[in-house]
Image (tube, rainbow, N blue to C red; front, side, top):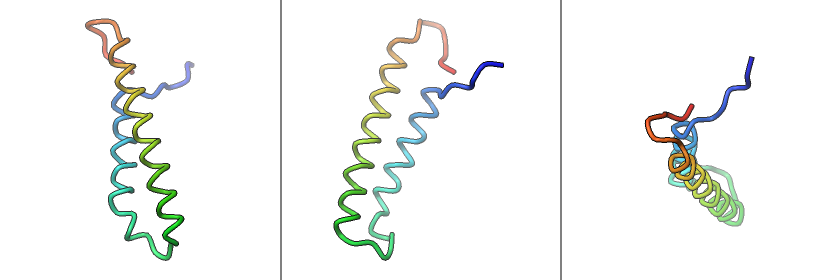
Amino acid sequence: MSKPKLSVDDLVYVADMLRAIAWVKSDINPASPEALYELEECLGAAESALRRVAAEMTISAPAGTKSN
């Protein structure tokens, strides 16, 4: 049995969830301002990377096929 692969939709979903966490980060208590800043930076970088990978997967998929 082959290993399941992440689809473009899966990556976009995770990126959306990372954005949602960044949006409500101020509700995470107790957390220091430094920790929240680091969280925001890391979430932003991860979201951006996932969206880029998803876009590249979409571009590289042959016409008429849907990614996993």
